[in-house]
Image 1 (tube, one colour):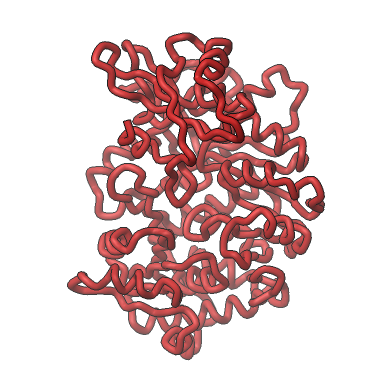
Image 2 (image 1 turned 180 degrees about the horizontal axis):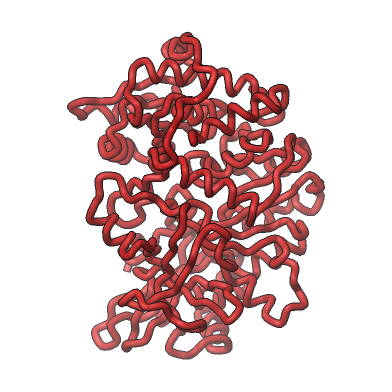
Length: 504
């Protein structure tokens, strides 16, 4: 099944409903979006072959979904690219994917031109809204999307590349369909006329969350800023009933700590789905106090989009459960469409309470990495996606992440998980952010170092030492504290621990 069928059906049933809005204003109904995607698809199909790749290098804009569904309408594969990358990074992804066409915006034209300048066979660059772009849409679009097999490539999802070059996870139409169905099963219900406000990049998580909303005839709202701004977010919540967001935990932190939240009308807010990094228990407790039971946590990867485990809305409200705080610090239970295990180095499943690598199997798991057979064989060994994340189950099936396997610290032969230490450090009222890494040590192998971003007057090292000694084993206490104005992060808000290690 072609994923563009969902747009086609939404246009038949909800044709007059808003599909895309910019800020307060509707820019396309579902009839408009379907017509424009079909027309764009016809233009692309006239110059490309089935299965060819088309890159989307755009900031969040009202053209993004038209491009994405137009690519699928034509039976082509989409390559959404983070618009904040460097031209050299654009060049790598375009060459690696073999993209034949790039749909980009005027503000990124120079960067994309620079990216393709050294290529022997550069892709065609088409600027959204330009005469060339509108020219692509002059042909009569097919009344229905090109039929696709469920295994056909739909989305080439490039990993964030925090270590080495990014890899293209091959997501098929079947993968995306299972992701959409799982959203309805485990995350949230969507009604026609609801809204999703895309404050996070459409090229990444928020774009994936657009798919179930298109399926159900909800409106996709692009903030005027194109991204996340707390003041704008509060205004958009007041404007759009039944609105949802996909937020990185850092965005939740900024929203709940913005002073305007005290006077904001958030009655239209339906759901905040958060994921993509650690959500600290103190933050989610504060968020629940301020906004109510409107939170769902997901744990996933580009290789298993949105869908490994989840902490449901109900699980966020079970305050009388004896392990409520422990569950809030977990990433929930296995989603309906996957099997999840924690295994040792030999891939032997481990019992509850023991820490190992998290592996996943199910129809949402990628087909493999684009043109990377060795990486595919390693990551999908034995038919299970090896996430590279370390974690453990409790007796009730709740999974708690420890860290990426590469971030684990081994000191004196003992495994130390940075997140546990970070959670403790964040209890200090003057610690805004904390990130813990290992530093080479001649006797112990590694020792613990904590990077701290202070809020107001910086805490003393003695205060932080006492906090750690009161809450965790002495050997886990940081041996050094480094104070920074900000932690280095990638374009998706993930802390770049590789850069922190380089500072040491």
